[in-house]
Image 1 (cartoon, rainbow, N blue to C red):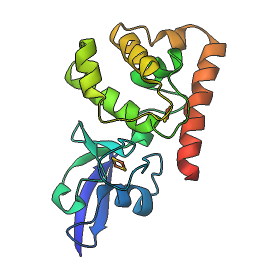
Image 2 (image 1 turned 90 degrees about the vertical axis):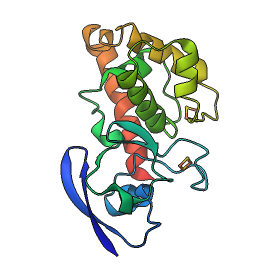
Image 3 (image 1 turned 45 degrees about the vertical axis):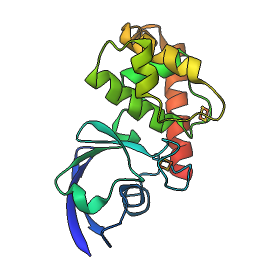
Image 4 (image 1 turned 135 degrees about the vertical axis):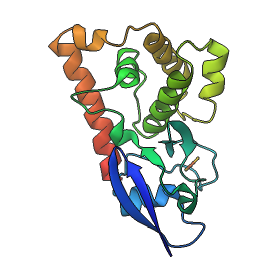
Length: 184
Ligand code: FES
Ligand code: FES
């Protein structure tokens, strides 16, 4: 058993690695209660729903051993934005209608955010490569890629500028995703 110091969504926390194989996914969901991060495969790195940021890079939390993360900065979907203040990619996903199940979307958003932070003007091939680790069972890839295109083009802030109706829709979609996350 080892204590590990992390910054999670900007807050310093101390967590316990019960063994060298304790996974960041389990610590985030079970110990910290941040259930917006999902598990959709058998913790085999196959689905992408468990994606978080570790020191700004997209990382599958089901493959990250927490013992090796002492001092790391972790961002989960709860730290990316809020229903009232969605971040750029969240706004773009709403604008493009890329939000469906709320199960894969947290991981999709984390990957998209990391992709654009690293490369603000990715080509379509770079977008496809950057998002390749995130599966969507319902095949919303075209809407997801369109959302990233909108974020790249700087159109996403129109969600806020377009008035209360669209803003309310965005807030509702964000809240729905968060609520589904907290319930599971
Ligand atoms: S839970 Fe599927 S990739 Fe992590
Ligand atoms: S929108 Fe989540 S699996 Fe398709």
